[in-house]
Structure formats: structure tokens, C-alpha cells
Amino acid sequence: MAGPITMIDLFAGCGGMTAGFKAARGYKPVMAVEWELAAAATYAANFGEQHMHWGDIADVPDKLIPEVDLIIGGPPCQGFSNLGTRDVNDPRNKLWKEYIRFVRHAKPKVFVIENVDRFRSSSEFALLLQETAPGGLLEEYTLSHDLLLAADFGAPQRRKRAIVIGSRIGKIEMPERTHEPSELLGLRTWRTVRDAISDLPRVPETTELPSISAEFFGKTVPGSFKSHDLHLGRRPTPLSLARYDHVPPGGGRFNLPEELLPRCWREKKTGTTDVMGRMRWEQPSLTIRTEFFKPEKGQYLHPQWDKDDPNNRVNRPITHWEAARLQTFPDDFVWCGSKIEIARQIGNAVPPVLAQAIAEHLKPYLRGKVPAARTADTLTTLESTRV
Image 1 (cartoon, rainbow, N blue to C red):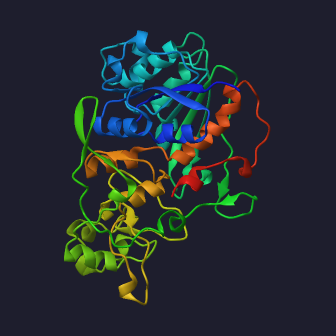
Image 2 (image 1 turned 30 degrees about the vertical axis):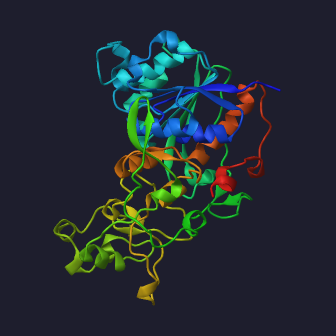
Image 3 (image 1 turned 180 degrees about the vertical axis):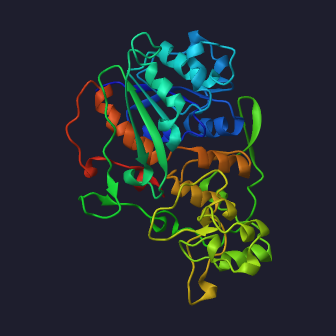
């Protein structure tokens, strides 16, 4: 039996990518790096504290970087533009230079970068491509890149992420999608908001996290919280409730009557349409961002809304648990931090099922085998372990 595929997770956050790679089986994280304490604690609570380095990635000395098969992570998009200056004191390129430092010392067969959807059209990305040319810092690697939609890989969410695969064992193309909006291509249909959260209580029992704490890295943090602890309500004002009540599924701020509009919306008749929006039961959600608990930030109202029965409406934003479900975190995942810190972890994470699809795709290459063509049925996702 082949040994585990060793990997490093950089800028790991709470561990969404690691969760997906571990679900694919055969992967072993031997190092992770995350500077935010609450996120690092969440990672440690789920995957172990010993291999998590909490702190500045620049503080990890070269001699402690192990050689591995794979590096994954999402360095911030800003700052790569000055990589070519080799100015180690330039804070704008520090994090990108650190990612590449890890690649050069760990010598992975493959690395995976995930980033925001606009990354591939940025000057930072253009310079990343330049570094794979002869004489560049990544000249051993060949890059593939594309924009992947999480819904196409089993997430009940239309979240787009730029994915870059760097390989020194031959070019590796992107994974093929396993889901589609309809069954026209014979794939599984997109998972929906209903699939993800319909079994959760409509009325949260509390607005606060339990008063418990845990110790990681010698520091005390709130947690570790189970998924059901994250089913948190809010205390909306009567004005907010009146606004929520006017928004049907798929609707947004333009459904509000004039008298309920805040001045900024009343004076601006154009602009973003999904703010103060309500989800649809039978579709994937839009992107879950870090402030999903604020309806004015996006389409985050609970999807239940009966046109004919005002008593059959759920006038609240989604809870942290519901957001984690839409991100495809399994219910046995535990969390550390304040409400805002956990929301940031959820919103910043790569959906584990998307990470798992990438992991399944890479596995045969990392095992030294060129994979045969795959069908949707060959991809085991986190769906069976979500609840």
C-alpha cells in the first residue's frame, strides 16, 4: 500500500482546504501556517495542534520546512507585483515571496493556489506566470489555471475561485465538473439551499455562543464550539423586520417600498441588486462572504417566504451553522473564536467539497499514475458526511 501524500497548507485559515484533502483520503498534512489566532485554533482543534504554526509565515525558518509532495494555500493577491525586485523588505510582496520560499524549500511535486475570481486577470498573476519561465523562481513548474464554480463540484453555492495548479511532474489540467444546473450532460444536478439547510430549526434558540474556552498555542480562545452552537439568531429592529418581510425569494432591496428605504438606497436607484436579498430554496446560494449575518451585505436572508401566509416566513439572516453548511463544512467540524471571527473563517474558506474534488483529481498524478477519464460517479464528496 502506498504511503500518505504529504502536504503543507499555507495561509490555512480554519482549514477548509485541508478538510477537503483529508476527505479525499491518502493525504497527510505535516505543516500548516496561519497568522490569525482564532483561525489557527480552529484548524488545530480539527486537525491537530502539533503541525500548525501560528504566527507570521516569515518567522518559519528554512530549516523547518519539510520536503513534501504537495503545497496548498491562498496567499493574498496584493503585493506580488514587486516580486521581481527581490526586495525582501518590501511588505507588499512579502507573503507571495514566502509562499514561493516554501515551494523552493519543500520541493513539492505539485502546488495549488486558490484566490479570488479576478486574480487571473491581475498583474500579480501575469508575474506569477513569468516566474515559471527559464531562470524564474518557479522554472521547474508548469501551470494550469481556471475559474472553478463551487456549485459544479457539489457545493450548494455559486462561489467562483481562481485555481492554479503548478506541477513539476507534467502539466495537470483542471478537474472536470461533476454537477450541473440540469441533467443535460448526465451529471448530477447542482445541490441547493434546501439540500443544505432545510433540516435546521427555523427559529434559533439563542443569540450567543456558549461561555466555554479552550487553550491552543498557550493562548485561551473561545471554543471549541460544535456546529449546533453556531445556530445563532440576531436581534433585528422592528424596521429591519419590516424590510425583511417585503423581500421574496430572489428579491432584494428593490422590493422595499419607498418608506422603508434608507436614505442611501432611496437616493441611489442603481447598483448592487442582491443586497437585502433572500435566498431561493431550489437554487444554490450566492457566495457566502465574511459578513453573511448582515442582510444589507448580500443575499443572506433565509429562503422561507410564503407569498400568501405572512406567518410562514422566516425573517432573519442565515445563521453561522447554515453558512457553514452552505460552505460544505461537515457537522462534526468544531470552531474557535468570537462570532465575528468564526464568521470570517467561514466566509474566507475554500468549500471543502471543492478542495476535495481537486484532491481526488491530483491523487493519481501524485501517485505516479496518469488517470483514466472519470465520471461524476467516481467522485466521493462530503455530502454523505455533512450531517
